[in-house]
Amino acid sequence: MGLHLLSAPLGEVALQVLTQGVLSGLCATLLYGYAIRALGGTLAAAYTAATPAAAAIGGGLLLGEQIGAATIAAAVITGLGVILSTGLLSKRQA
Image (cartoon, rainbow, N blue to C red; front, side, top):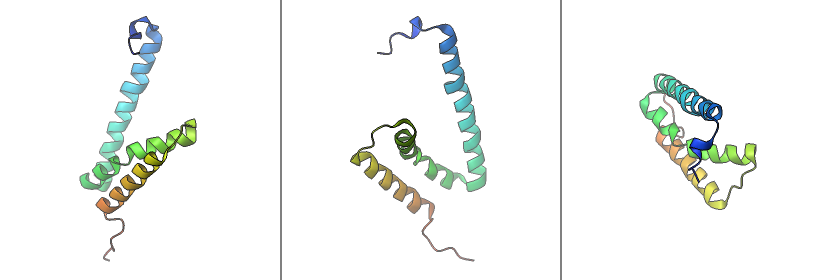
């Protein structure tokens, strides 16, 4: 488990490093910077809490992974926390 990296073809390892390391890391950094500018630091940070829930839902819908009751409960609680911390339910003043 995890000990066969050196036996993998170099081209495949390089492709994984490029796509998962460089490209996704670069995209995530750029998008997070944009979110901070657009939403402000507090709101952008609050929405990052939803990432594990979104990954679980995406895994269930796109990959057919099993989503158990604990995962659903965690996603709901996380979603409620994001909603409360961002003030989405508070009345807006005009």
